[in-house]
Amino acid sequence: MSPTQRIDSADAISQQRFKYYDFAMAAFVVILVLSNVIGAAKPAQVDLPGIGPFVFGAGILFFPLSYVLGDVLTEVYGYARARRVVWAGFGAVVFMALMSWVVVSLPPADGWEGQAAYEQVFGVVPRIVLASLIAFWAGEFANAFVMARMKVWSKGKHLWQRTIGSTIVGQGIDSLIFYPVAFLGIWDTGQVITVMITNYVLKVLWEALLTPVTYRVVGWLKKAEGVDIYDAETDFTPFSVKS
Image (tube, rainbow, N blue to C red):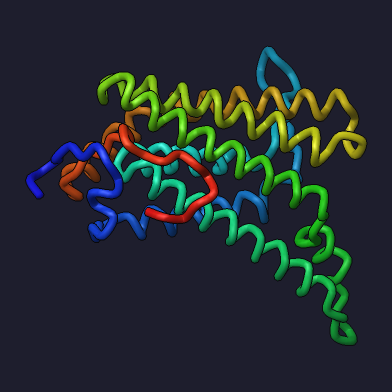
């Protein structure tokens, strides 16, 4: 294929081997798992000069990077391959939750005094896991769908509109599902609403701030892979792993 050849059907290159697709998938899965292990359940607070206490979910520090990678994957490799990555991430989070439950449930050895702290950090709360899985699944697929459809509508122009627009939709769905399902009744209602809104705004701002990086990565990958995929003839069902 010639450099950056336009492809209107993912099926046309279903057997194409890409140089960096698997690395992008691995990065996506790692960021997703880490965001669920060390960030999702902790509300953090910083004092901002002139504003006062500012509460946000600690996962905001790196979870939005999964949406940035999702945008890159959809833009460069098309919806079908992005869908495959979403399912890989979904499976990884399920496995992480299962193994966390198994390890925490194992009886500690005599003399080990870290069980309580271990349970507090790595203990699996079924409600939070369920909220995370549903929110991730719905948000990521909405993000990929909007990204792919906007690319066709805009004829590939104005990448920044697609990345920010898809994040507004995807992160909005993610936040509206995750925080109420995971924490309503556990945290104060006001805290749930505050963290949900602030995290949503911060996620969208993260996407906007990282737009120049997204442009560079997308441009480099398209040139390296030699294709520019438009999902004009794509089956957008999320219930498939066909690439």
